[in-house]
Length: 110
Image (cartoon, rainbow, N blue to C red):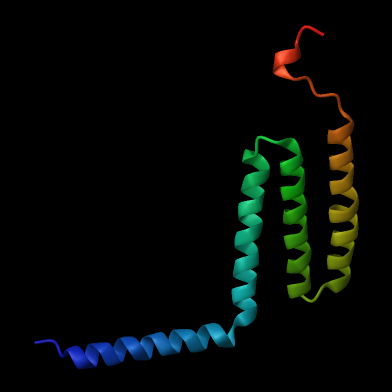
């Protein structure tokens, strides 16, 4: 027979150890959350039907990369990433998308 009390105590002990491991490695938890956000945003860049939404998801990916540089103690590279890619390139994409003439399917007789 399996001792239920011992199994419950073992499960509670394992859960306590898991919580302690997570609390002692909050940098790793934050990095994993950031990586998941970056991957999901990168997928939305490719699959989004609206071009402007893709540009803003790309800005989110660039921001996640910049924060990753902060995790690696490369603050200068992170600041450059934020200024050049998030600031300049994303705004350039947004302006170029807004300034291009878009034809609407229903108005092809123009």
